[in-house]
Length: 271
Image 1 (cartoon, rainbow, N blue to C red):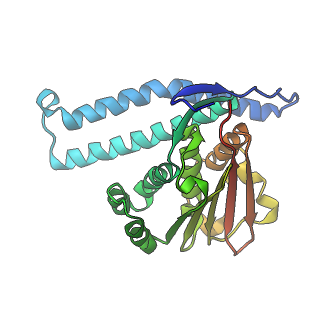
Image 2 (cartoon, one colour):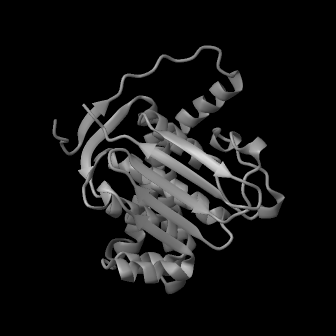
């Protein structure tokens, strides 16, 4: 059966496990409230701020300093909207709801990398929009310690799944690696049936006793060596939730002082 663009597909929801931690249930309730109650206000804030920037004939001109400040506000509202959208995608995945479509893995990876670089290296992100040649791409990313390799079937053929959710997996794995690396991040995409994604960094690594905790919702590891690393404690939790809902798996290989590698396997979406 051919994949149709934007066709809704729903996995059978697995039976809920009784006896969940009451504290976790309370946090999940807060999580749902955030999704519901923040969507409207953020949309209004984004629209209003954009109007101040682009409709000077109606709202009056801004000084150069005011324009820079309003642009900064808009960028941060968009970041909040992205986080909220990721929360929604996690919630939808837990309900087994997917949008089936064929898409280019290379293009999805590139767009996700642009999102990551917008925060870490905005000038590189801007150039990445316009680069098509693979050699040019390699030359652009090399000074930033980033290498990408795409081999196997999906180097040429499209992958069938929910593109938005796959991009979220790409984005969170790469964002995590960029936060904790010392000098480099390596991304490898391969596979002949299932899509295999590997993201490796040369960071300080994760102690064996903490490796399960990195996937828990609302948990961030306390690392005095990297107290400057920002985050919400949701990224890897979201990746795990998405991957498991996709009937795939995620594995972690890490040693203290020797970096970390996350590997994700995603089967193509079938009817």
